[in-house]
Length: 221
Ligand SMILES: N[C@@H](CCC(=O)N[C@@H](CS)C(=O)NCC(=O)O)C(=O)O
Image (tube, rainbow, N blue to C red; front, top):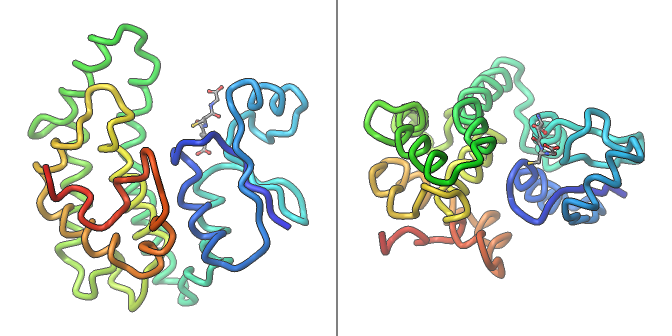
């Protein structure tokens, strides 16, 4: 039995939730609130003090990108060829890059200041604009549709899809769904991923913030 523990939001855990579901292993999605997180931390159940974690039959694993690789392998979507796998890992790091710019904005208390800082990142040439254009370029250079030019979906595709479109869900002050229309190639990637049968099945009944992962989600913007 595997148990993924995280907050309700997609955040750092959604890719692993998707892969656990796809893998067919027995797993439990445990959702905690802030008090639940603090209780786990105080009980020293979090190896590095953060969520998400996955409790496995062999012990607890932490760090979202380690969980991504572990659950991606459980789902059979980690390439066997080491060079291809390294290329996928390279893309995972590139895709993860935006967190470096965006995460510090969570610590800005003043709402106006926070919104202004984020808006600056999305103007042409801003750090988030460049990060999103990098993913767009990688997609446009693929001849198979999958970011690492593989024959099937990999963890890089799922991470790029979930992490990127989560940004436009409306949950982050200063970032509105219509801002996605500045990235037409990214929207093509959205169509490609959201219409994949595995993704489509996973999000068919989804509600709330997860509207961004459904086919045609951004058509009205
Ligand atoms: N490097 C960690 C970061 C995870 C992280 O920042 N988790 C947040 C929730 S999204 C957390 O546990 N925050 C608690 C806190 O800041 O005290 C990972 O990738 O898993």
